[in-house]
Amino acid sequence: MGGLAVVIAPGPAMINNVAVPLVLFPGAWGVLFFYACLDQKLLRAYGVVAGLTLLNGGLIAWHFAQTADVLQAAA
Amino acid sequence: MINVSTRMTKSLLAIHGCSAVFLGLLLYTVILTGTLAVFEHELGVWANPPSQAGEAPLPSGIGARMKTLAASVDPAYLDEVGVFPSSDGRLMAFFHTHVEAEQGREAVEEGTLILLEPASLEELDRVTGSADEVFRHFGNNALSNFLLDLHIRLLLPGQWGLWATGLLGFAMLVASVSGFVIHRHLIKDIFTLRRRRADVLAARDAHVIAGSWSLPFAFVLAFTGAFFSFGGAIGLPMLAAIAFGGDVETALEVLQPEVGEDSSPAPLADLDLILVSAAERTGGEPQNMFVNHWGRADALVTVRMSAEEGGLLPGAVLYKGATGEFFKTQPNLGNEPSFGGDLAGLMSPLHFGNFAGTPSKIVWFALGFASAYVALTGMVLWTRRRESEPGWDKLARATAWLGYGLPASLAAVAAGYFLLIDGVSGLGYSLLYVFLGGLLATALLSFGARSAEAANRLLLRLTGGIMLLLPLLRWLAAEGPGWGMALSSGLSWVFVMDLCFILGALACLRYKRPHSSPEEINIERTDEDKTVAERVADAA
Image (cartoon, rainbow over all chains, first blue to last red; front, side, top):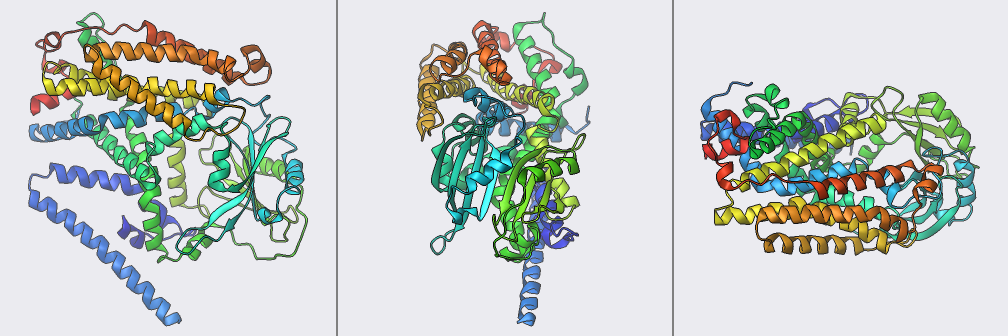
């Protein structure tokens, strides 16, 4: 969910990147939950969930690094 | 019918059963209180009606009345002013400002709250203090607020309650999706009620019919409920921190309209004319009104409207306070219309069912009641099948306790409200003590009864008995209006609610549960006859 806030464009009202992931959160959680419960290969399920977690974390870290660079340049 | 492999069906059955067994009773609590909360305003009016119903949420003349009230409060509290109807139909005018709190704590709202009669706009009472203190001071909404607090937070403090109900929302989401996939004869089950078969099969069919009709609704409620609980508790702060890099000022700028600051004094324009203009401009009805910087040149008046005829999403109209000039219309969320704002705005009408007035509320109530019935009868059917086993008997009694003791305790809270309320004065934690006392008493009855079945019957009759007393207590103990006076004062909901409670009480008192022994319940049935819960057990 956090990664989506970085990927989705804010739009003219500047809120799409907050509102859309927020609404999609229960659905995204549900899909991941059922996938993790129903996948026959447990290791693959671990891998997919861990991969998505890392991808989200990476996107958020990259976004914060970009913001810090902009602030440093402005200072 | 959805074709899935046997292995996947077994997994889905296990998921469905686990979500029901571990969280079923708490889920039932949230669903039942949510079903009642659909009529939160009507319950508020019934419990503590004003002397005369208002012509509209913001009646004509409220603008002029607000100006006379503004002259009577501390000028510091003119920083932010709001006027809005409370659950019981009375009006609340809150004149307040934001006070910087000690380091490390959030700013608090402090001001004067004034309670007004909706028709005459007469002042009933006023109190000054922090927002928490002033809203707790009045007891006119205490019954509705208690119900909402139980539904939204399970009476838990702070964010813990939102976490708990968010988790229950996810459990309901899991149960409804897995129930849909493993439901083999959805269309057929919607119309199948074998009244002439064994009693237990008729009861089983009633459970499946209610479940089949309310399945899509349960999904919508679970999705929107999880959105509200988790969204408010963790989602929004986390996403806002990421999207705006933790910059609160930028976040606020995005959500609030830009008005140049000008603190020079200027009289406020005619608020009644602004309300008329807002109604003409949007085709909706003004629901509440807020004024920022009252008495300053940069004053801004925000009028929140109901959705226009045929529309689903409400919006707001903004006016410049000093001139009364139209400034802009504002969507439900954000400063400009957006896909994300509309998507988030849809969650409210879908969860509360208030998008088409009373008819949609009745549908939401009926489907909510069906969902609560499914949660309870699913647990009852499953535990009755195993009540001869020692461990399951405890769960059967716990199901009887919460299943039938919760409505009895809620009815006791309403009775306690009528016995304790004095005008509009606050009740503190009295209703919580009544509720906990009710739960304790019903627990003793459930676990002390001859059997879980006997406890069910006893608690159902207790609920009916208390419900039958409610109209009398409202009239005699709380000195509420009689039916004739209520109808002539435009308070028809008082009469309707009394009637609903009497009919509900008679249904509880006259209900005869078909009694079947565990052996009867375990009679050989075709695979088609088995409930989802039974198939979970078979799979296990």
